[in-house]
Image 1 (cartoon, helix red, strand yellow):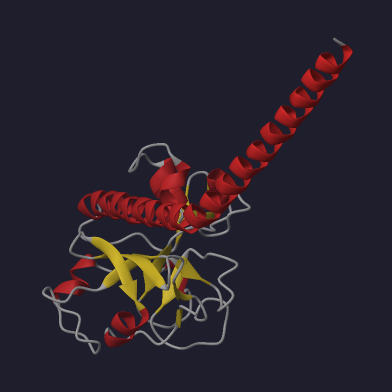
Image 2 (spheres, rainbow, N blue to C red):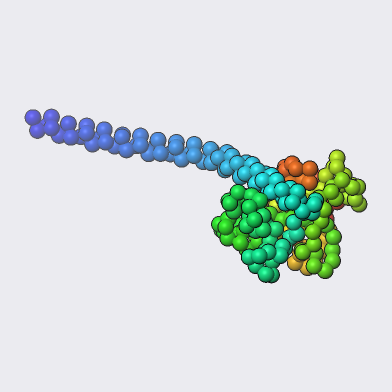
Length: 233
């Protein structure tokens, strides 16, 4: 009887050992599968954020067009005089404050830019999508431009068939650590003219054109449009 009990106990111990080994094998298989799937999941998340960014810019562009309709074809300026701040507020904050866009601060910034800051903080600090400056000069951030600039042929070949970029993912330098409320199409040295279109989406930048559409654009396509300041690498 005692021998039978001992044999039974040994069988239970051996059975438990095999169960533990099987569990470890299953865990190892799950870990391997997770490692294989994780890059795909990360790419899917990145694509989703890029889609969100394009949608955001389309809504920002639509709100700018509403402003244009109210002000005889003039686009907002980068820095706007406003009743809430005597020194002026950013174009995005103005559109937000004056009801040209739904009260959602996340619409004004790329999900992949400055991820450590929440959307409201980025909007209030003007760390959001950039509005294009078309020329250099004093007070350039307070200057308005007519949207019908896209109807003309300029030095960069922008026409109604090949429209000008007005809004874009933008940064102050090649680190892309800080997003900015404006961007410039020429090379420059000061804080405003160093701002350029920046790629936050697998070496592509989200941009909005004056004809109303938004898309992801490559560095080469941007250079082909005459831009000289661009942060893509």
